[in-house]
Image (tube, rainbow, N blue to C red; front, side):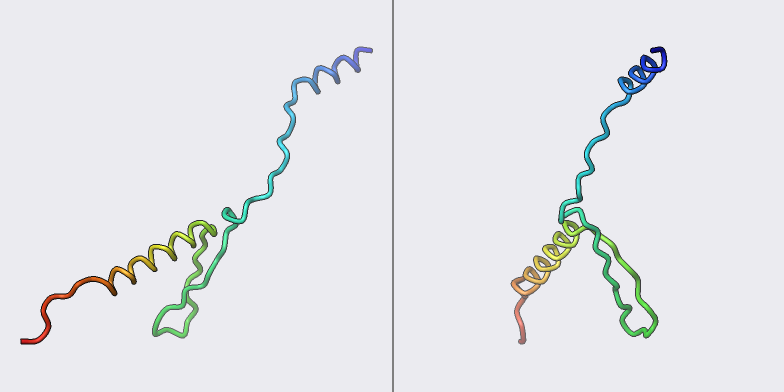
Length: 77
C-alpha cells in the first residue's frame, strides 16, 4: 500500500511530456557550399533555414532589380 502511494505521488509530480512536433519546412536547415572564386580549394559551407534562404534570395533579387532600374547620369558629351 505504501509503495502504491509513493508511485502515485511520483507520477502526479511529473508533467506530461509535450508531443514531439516535427519541424516545419520553413524551419528545416539547408546547407550550401559557396565556392571561392579563383580557387580550386574547397569553398565554405553556409547553413540557414529555408525561411532565411528565401529571404536572402528575395534581397538579392531586389538588389539586382534596383541596380537595373537605377537611373544613370548623362552619358557622352
